[in-house]
Length: 362
Image (tube, rainbow, N blue to C red; front, side):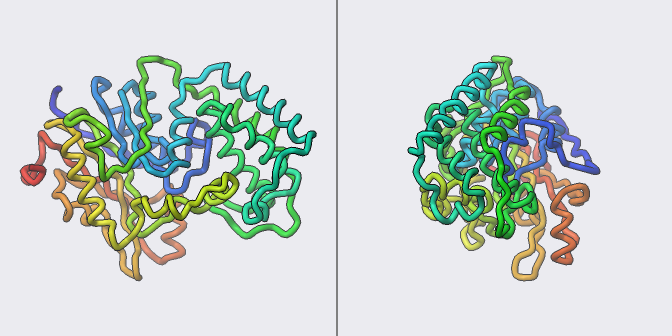
């Protein structure tokens, strides 16, 4: 493969991209799709790209769309299913299946054999909306991967609607005392129709989503098989990726999210050692001329702002680091609240053309 390209990192006045496949579900902390696409479009298509922390699949979807063979790894089951929904090679059959499932769910609802929604998530929904969710949940295993992701996204949307849309698209707010009714079936159908037009149908566009731990990448992927790594790793200030709307979904499905959480990389005390392990694993699964890109950022922990670029550079010296402001993103809001002026860093390790300290890879 030829030398790695020099990546140009663009500045966006706004990173909002709601009219895309990425609106399926409001996954907390996901990278901007516009930002991901702007970087991926600069990569040759004759290689394999890996996102070792794929989350809801933003990078993997954009890589597949670009024509790359792409792999996404995550060990959060909710994230894995949303990522599978995004890269699913669906067609009109998904919409036909959607209609059938809604029809069957309505019949189940009329029969009354739906079961009760658990008490904790029930507090976030209108009683009738909750019944519609539970009726459709009984048909979950009949859904394709796309519709499963749509189901999760519609649960999040319904929770917002039942609470007067006072919650944000990515965070759960205070429960409204008197709930508004939300027609779950109608929202499910509309969400499926809206996002079906973004299906990747070209068979040359290939993506694989792997449920696994990125601290064990060499057990999941062949050595030297990856040409490009592009990821936004978990925040090192302990963001809970099983919380927010995900908490509602896990509770509706009766899944112990604490068991899932303990296996995620999201604990401040162990974060550095975890990332050291991941970077060593990346060295094994990437080719000798691989390009590795981490989008990170400053974090405020214990009243102190930690520079994300410096943090990762101390773990494994980078080829170069590009820094830019958070302007145009939702993160700017938190700077106002926390009285900080944080920056975002793009850390690049170029295994072929490293500048000065490439030998640290070996």
